[in-house]
Image 1 (tube, rainbow, N blue to C red):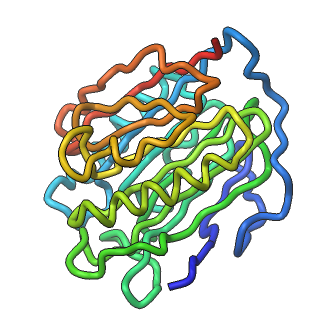
Image 2: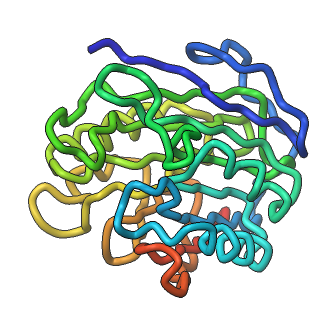
Length: 265
């Protein structure tokens, strides 16, 4: 299957929508911030299980909790998995001004996967305005497990490359580790070509140990930290992952939140 690249929902700074694109954006990454030595970049990873299809669904309680954690941590990068497209607008007020990109997972017939309420289901990446550029890329993977995989979803990725900071999110195959590994390697090859510094965050559905494991995905030029389970963050080697904090989501989802602090040596 040829790669399908689509930006399904893109929101620009504050609440002003940017133009949607199909295919990789042709504009080069630009930004106005700085990641000079000593700069700290905070990255928040959340899997909010908000689609309504899984046993972990707890309704809108997770949206309240997610907004609280965003306000408390003030992340420069926010990665949200198992989200609905409308969650972008619901979480945006908790962020500082930021650029956001949503990408839907796909059904086996290529149509967008839907949340319980009919909204599109997928992943969100947000980057603070001071680091964000104008380029965006998103899509589904070539490698897909077409038996029961979550809810028969074709897994997706979304990236916001920029001259100052490039960031990606993803949610990989949950029922076939070799497929998850192929997807991880695919995304990390893509991320390696983005302007640095670069961070890739998400629910990879692979642990640090086992066969295959996240170690089998680790590329040269990146370091990785995780939650001891399936959520991980990669940082290019011009960044140091100086701190990792696990956040109790108080039963509103089946995954803890993860807050990473990245610094320029």
